Image (cartoon, rainbow, N blue to C red; front, side, top):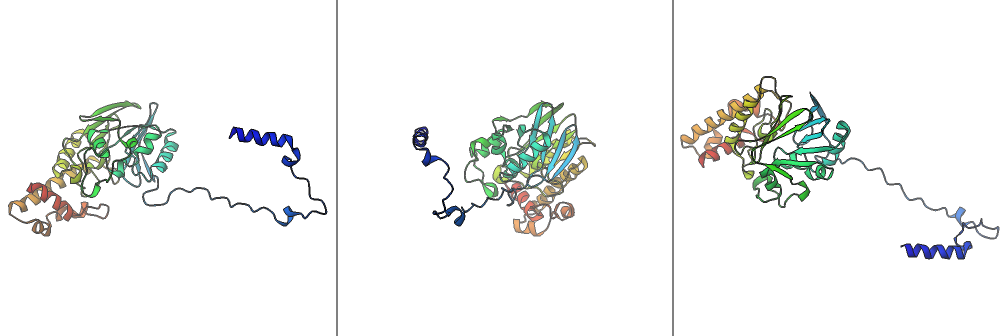
Length: 330
């Protein structure tokens, strides 16, 4: 390219008349410029934010004090801590809204996340990992999150992924028995679920001084849970993990659920009571020798449908009954 430009430059110097601006047309010459003005290329429209499914940034911010916020939008709820030590983020929603979320968080926090913790591996919570990692975030998660994202452990069922997530999306720091972060005036405690729950890699994250708990999808407010058996999840795990969560919380704890509005300790207790009651109700039918079809038809979860079977969730009582029944029959 440099040789070509030099050649052109030499040619121009040798023949200025060929390279200079053309003289105005003489009367004998047709004014081709006037008769045939150059066509202007259309200016492409300014790029607009994506408008497809799950492409919008979070739409609501709940200020919990101490520089901590709950961010609500498409996908799982995010947790955000902002302070002198940087921006700490819990989960990142979808790959399709990661860029929008990153821009909005940067605007809100006046900086990009340095630390990112996944509560579990699902695409509506960890789908934005690659985007945030490339923006400078270090990703932390339980060991099985990395194994699921990398397909070292193959997931089956409705959340199966045909190929591994991009390598940049994999957590670079993993743990099996929890880890503490000391940032922004907080002890931020990541606690492994005591047994497989929503998946086999769930983590609770507790801001000790601020008394704020993020549960990931081990708790979704006023909804029947999604027990992702293809990711190693168990119904018994919901009982064990919520029992552990209630050992942490108190009457003033603010709880960020995986989905749904901000919750309280009383809400969490109500969910635990439902899980225990549902298991007992289905177990009674199993002990009576009922088939799966008979157990589902008996509607054993009817007492909890008014609260947990509403339109906000995608798991109904029949689906949850089926999961419990199959687990009890193993």
